[in-house]
Each structure stands twice: as structure tokens, then as C-alpha cells.
Length: 161
Image 1 (cartoon, rainbow, N blue to C red):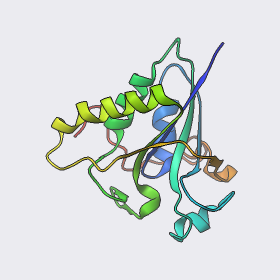
Image 2: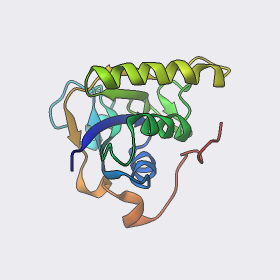
Image 3: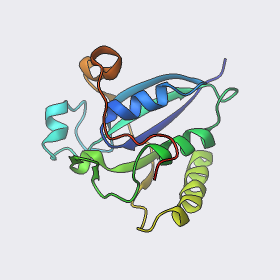
């Protein structure tokens, strides 16, 4: 089996990880940090707003079972891409909306999906689309958080706007 990687930031990584993990064809979803200037940051450091990292989810998927375009559709559906540095009650630069692409094809697809998404919103989309730098997995207690602890968050149900 050949797998691919996709990385998304859409607010608190607990709900984002859970949403992607539920999609058929997703092999794994790992909560972590991306886009900052500190190696191997901790949750406390990221929350201090001094590292520049976003809370993100690295998704490993089987492209024979789910396409990158389907992951992009889920990304747009589970959060509000018009909120700058916030999602629901979570406020801070670590909660920004971003697609971190792995290669030119993902970059093109992400930009095209953003352009298709724009007319669906009354406010401008603030989602960043950037080449993926190094991803740092979050501490173990953040992984599969909802499976371990139950709970819910601001993640919007599929299709909600």
C-alpha cells in the first residue's frame, strides 16, 4: 500500500484529529505543531505565543481509498476559515487556519479548493496555504484525546456554515 501525507491546522487539534481519523481511507491522524521557529516545541511553549507554531494534524491516508480533494472538503467543513487566529472559543495564533502542502500538486489543489470555497462565505477566507515545514508530534496525552477522555469541541458538523 502506498500512502500520502496531508497537514491541516483548523483550531484545537483534538477535534481536528478526531474528525480526520473518522474518514474512511485515513490511516492515521497525529496531533502536533507546525510552522514555528522552535525545534520540538511543547504545548506550553506553543500556547505562550512565542514559537509561531500552529496546532495541526498530520494525516496519513491511502490515496486509493480517499483523495486529497476529499480531505480538503473535510477541512473546509469542520472549521470557519474566515476567523483569524481563532476557532470558536479558542483564540490565539496557534489556532490559525492553514493548509501545509506536501509538494506542488497538493499546493495547486489547495489553492483551487480555497478559490472554490470563497463564494460560500460572506467574509474573506484567511486560511494560509504554505509548503509544509517540519511537523512536531504533540505530547502523548494530546494524541487521540477524545478517544481517551471523551469530550467535544467547536468542530462544526459536516456541511455546517
